[in-house]
Image (cartoon, rainbow, N blue to C red):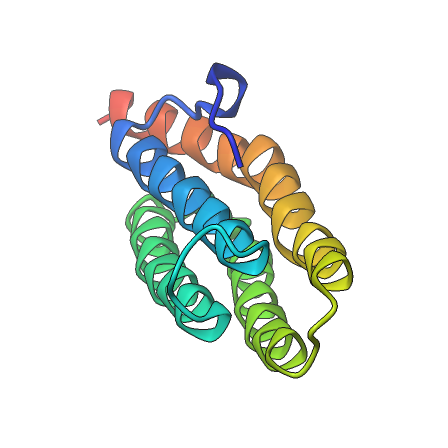
Length: 134
Ligand SMILES: [Fe+2]
Ligand SMILES: [Fe+2]
């Protein structure tokens, strides 16, 4: 998953964490296609753990700024974590690389792209406005 400027939310820490997540997603893909040594389960675990850490950070920003969409946004995070853990089990039990790649693309790549470009940008805009109103 390649980072590009279009994914920038303008919040430096959030953007840096997103870059790291994109890198970890690419690691999962690389392992699936046999370009890396780790197991797919380990690579997905790294991604899931870091993502949970990132979500907590975003939820702190939302909580601090009294963001009205926090419940909706947090539910998107929680649902994603559940989906990634289910994906981990499917990928572990499936040896067909192209099937796994499609699954990863559907569950992880598409969701992250939509979430960063949508909910995260809206949240970061709100947080920036809230900060400048203090
Ligand atoms: Fe988010
Ligand atoms: Fe995010």
